[in-house]
Length: 355
Image (cartoon, rainbow, N blue to C red; front, side):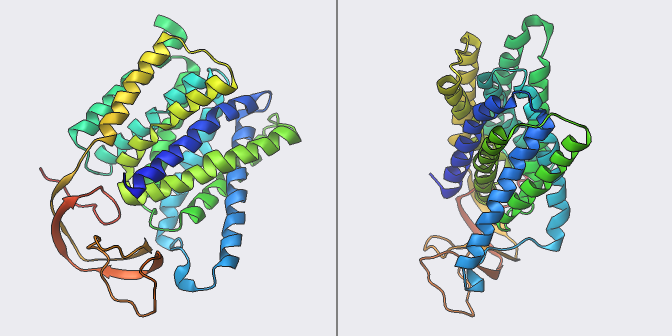
């Protein structure tokens, strides 16, 4: 299992487990206020991590690649979609649905992320990924119909589906800046989204949570939104958007399991059928293999990398002393290269697939 897959699954587990805790916090607080505190907890916690890391690191070449001016439009779009709209829609949906069902519906984020990556951003997806997405969509529809029978989709389910679309847009825009420092990216997202949502809550007179629930929401936001999204951004570097979204589809299973333990919810038969469909879809994603002869054009960029023996992409010279056993960051150039190996659409494999 690759490093990117491990980061994606860890991100999924943290985010999925945060859903039932967020459900407990809904109470009388307005969704926009709770969303603001969740994201502000993420931003403040990661800002503290950045400060501690800056003190601990004394050599510039050991610092992570920072955001560049050309990254800012992509990051601003990601903050607007995933940081402002997504959390409010999620909190609205959680107030109307059982946490276990809401957790499984969050699988739609992976499907929509992959669909946008494939059709809009032209990232390669093979038939196994497409079939897996179809199974996850079927599971989400089944779960939604359970809430209202033949009357149609529940408003809460539609709100969560809309949140998933916002996060799918966020994921694809974030991929454009994924080479930069993941902690910095997510800290900016959290601080911006949290501040704006809280200002909206105050301006509209929305109900605010008490000090205890607010502190709890900040902790949940730091773990379920902050640390989780840092791992997600790192996974984007290694796997590309569609495949990271596919692995992240494991999140709702962690959320559903936590809901059963924490909230004592007892799902019906439709839940288990949907879970089986989603498990099959995720299995198809996990077992996808991609290998063919491909050509790399010359590329110059900066990101954290390590000089592993099997890595043909990082065999460049250094103007400074360095430890081959440790990762480091500096601007480096990749010469043209053609070879064959199993790969994902990571930072170095964003080539065309005409066949």
